[in-house]
Length: 162
Image (cartoon, rainbow, N blue to C red; front, top):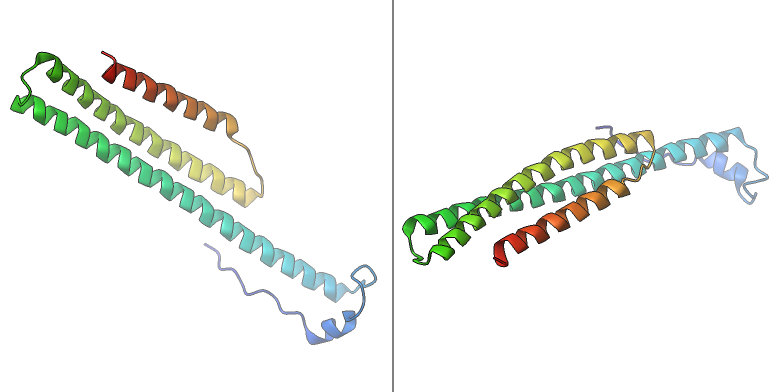
């Protein structure tokens, strides 16, 4: 990771030379060098902010992944525990609990898929920042969102409308 240097200070003689003159009338080479240095500094700070935002987004994906996997394992194990302990005597309820266990397994798989997506996305956005490009990935995001909506809806129907 590169260190961001302190912003260059405008030398006193350059400041005196341009004092009172509009920017258009000033054709000082020294001023253009200062502006170039300032532009490089701004670009470095901007890239740093973008990389930090990318890391925050990646950490959000990771928190969601940990939540999905953890809750999926809990749901799966708890439903198996209740079935094994035979706390429910109705056969339909036991079947319902096994299905809930399968939903827990699905949450674990979904969490692992989200982890793979987040690693890919973090890498791709990092490369885009370094190149100074913005590539919109709206189609992929919308497709994944619609897929998750359908998957969640079908799971709810499968579990609760039997």
